[in-house]
Image 1 (cartoon, one colour):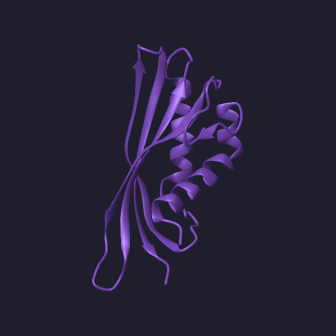
Image 2 (tube, one colour; image 1 turned 90 degrees about the vertical axis):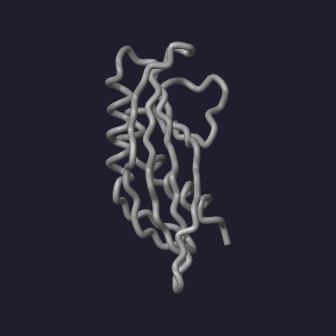
Length: 136
């Protein structure tokens, strides 16, 4: 069976990459685990993922915190914020389908946009909290 974290990322990737409105904001299906060299801005990458045991006496479950990074070279934060808003709308409380697991909940826990002066890019962060159980 695929690990819960891998199955979660697969489902999140499919949800983001399969959305026409998000693809339009990104200028194509630019959602990556690790961005290729010289990819055009804007794009989204997967960041840190943490998993914690959430099991009870009768059910096996995990809690996950995962971060999406939004990268934009646009003037101002408008582009990064629009991409973040669409990604949040797609994922917050979404009915993600996963093989071998049941999604209990997914919700946005934190968001931030900052300008990274070292690389002259607006960097957005979306951190989600996910609870999931093994399917019966």
